[in-house]
Structure formats: structure tokens, C-alpha cells
Length: 170
Ligand code: SF4
Ligand code: SF4
Image (cartoon, rainbow, N blue to C red; front, side, top):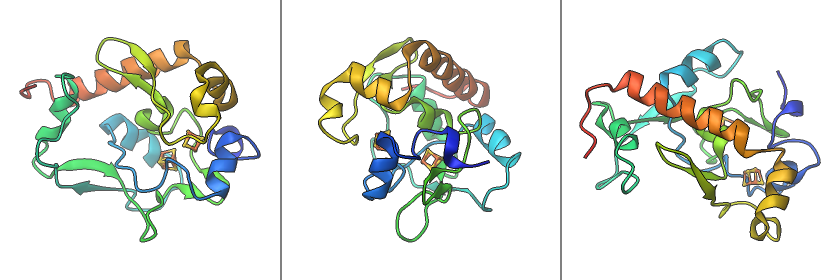
């Protein structure tokens, strides 16, 4: 496992970002599905690699009722763990140590914006300029496409609903 086949690594856009300490893998609360945890556990990773944080008052994503289910966990929000400096425990010097098939679904989807129904667009507010102002260029530089993202979006919501089938969504 190395950062060689994943986005935040190498000489590309994500590598440039990571080298400048600007990566989205710092200080970001990345929710993990049970599927994420199972996939990551199959790799050699620091332990523990996730933790629970309090759900912020009013936490949620607006009108996304399915997404609101994750805020019902009695321990809080299950998120990737960070080192004291703020970077994700799975972030190596050259990027994410996980291959794309193992990476948390939310990480795979960034910077796409989405809901329970579809991919809606991109919100690259963390990605470096000037690429963030040019969506097709940004996606090309990140090696991403909507078709693949749609598969991940669908998996994310499926795994949320599997874990919280009866949770209230409002
Ligand atoms: S996805 Fe954007 S913010 Fe995250 S490492 Fe890549 S370029 Fe940087
Ligand atoms: S799992 Fe990988 S892509 Fe996701 S925040 Fe951590 S280092 Fe970044």
C-alpha cells in the first residue's frame, strides 16, 4: 500500500496541495461507514484510526434527510482520527496511504457535492486556485469522473441506510 495510486500524492495537484500543508486531509471531520472501517481494517494502518466526536448543535446537511441518520449514533459522530497537528492518521508525507478502493467513501467523493439522489456538482473550496474555478480541469487533474463518483455516492448512502435503517431523518 502506498500513496502512488491515490489522489493526494505524487507531483500532481493533490501532491502539490499536501506539500504545502493545504490538503483537505487536515482538520476535516471525515465520517466513516461500517464498510469503510471493515475495508480499512484489512490494511496495515495505525490503530485506532477512528474516533467519535460530539455532534455539533444543529449538525446535519440541510435537506439531506438520509444523511441526517449518521447523527443519531449514541457515541457521537464516527470520524477518521487526527494526529495532534491536525492531519489524518492515514496521511503520509506523499499523500493518503490507502488505495482508492479502501479509502473512505467520503474521501473518494471530495470535491463532488451530492445528496441521496445524485451527484450535484463540485464544491472545491479547499482545492488550490486557479484549478478550483475550472471544474472540468480540476476533475481531470484529480483523475476523477462523475460515473465513478456516482458508484461511490450510491455505496455511501446504501451503507448509511444499512447501519441506521430505522433512524429518524429529521
Ligand atoms: S482534493 Fe483538493 S484539497 Fe484535497 S488534496 Fe487534492 S487538491 Fe488538495
Ligand atoms: S483517509 Fe486518506 S484521503 Fe481521507 S482524510 Fe485520511 S489521508 Fe485524506
